[in-house]
Length: 582
Ligand code: BGC
Image (cartoon, rainbow, N blue to C red):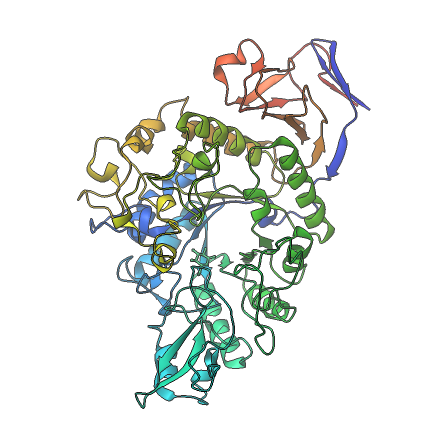
């Protein structure tokens, strides 16, 4: 039993519920803050309308001021950009759009001098159809070793003109495309879980393993701190490539609860990551692997982060949790218990380049009218003020949690999605492949605003941008927020400083159940009491030192309004008496 007291008087007597003890290890990746950069939209130094590596290098000091441990760069490799660079044509070179290998080296050197590690994206499930290996496979014909690098099969039906199975692409349409053989005849089919320009590698072939080991070593030798592994759960396909009647993304549905889709989560996959971990261990400096694996439930995802496999996995169950206190408590507790059970850190993430930004998600009160993964001009428009208020509060809760955190560029400015983007600008293959039924992810990939008064909001000096920025972003530009103590940027800076000084990433979690109302999420981590008010009414704040609050307005009255978060110091609080007693 513990008692929280204020000025010597009892505020409440609560039985804490311990969930997560202080972390076991001290490795940096157990408590890291990793900032995702989408290079095409970060900063454009040469003015061609597309972000570039020198643009990132020029602004790294801003991320150092935020106090992040590492940056993760989405792909900047040679690519025709049919899927935003996740269609790689050469894994060991930089696309001229982004710069050169020399620019990459300069970026790593600058990051190193600022104490920031650099993680790169590795896309092992598929490459671009422009890749020399795929081009060679097309030329070499059926039965050749070149074709064995990919998943080619004869079609079904007497003329072979039906796809080998019923798999669907993530981006809509069939997951198979038929090729024309060198003879000029219609021929075999190849599988592509994503766009037809992204043929899947055949991970049953040792030559594919060797090729990726070469790629890993290439970047490790160039000084990267690790890899975010794209669709890490898809590499191996079930023998015989059986039909699948569940969702194309393999996520469980009521019809297929916990079912293993033939293209995802095959048991043989883990041997690949065991080997990669050994490769990384040959290099100094605790280099890491982080799995992007949409595996549910969490108890299965933990198979990816066993001590001899990956170091981290994205926690998409957390990202997918809406504005709901019960659901949030459940996913936090479940995540910590599950990852603890295998000795891995839990990670937390609210936004990335594939989802609607959380400042927009939390501002949508109805289910969007259209299906799909973006919000467009015809959909219900978010309540921007509500979305931002909730996003700030949700981010502050996340930054107080023990484990690793992923931030997506622009969330520290409180950016929403571009929800009125005209369709003519859309580049996501999901938009094209579903004839506009799914809007795709362009709305969360819009170039960042640096300067409210400059053309293209300071993204570059030419005023060109590959996607237009919404006009309301001007007021959210970095220069406007930089020196404003009440800005979202200042809030993130303060939270990240405190997260480090109070060692929250390596801390513990005890619930303070039903604090005021069940709609209040309340926990203690390393002597810091964190309250998130997800209800409709203001709640009392105990008379403890306020370390940080999103609700300056009511702080003087010691209240926390709806959709606000506060961090309080339990120990050495400066209030009369012991503020926190065992
Ligand atoms: C990436 C996406 C990409 C897909 C195919 C994902 O998980 O995050 O942006 O479209 O993999 O590579």
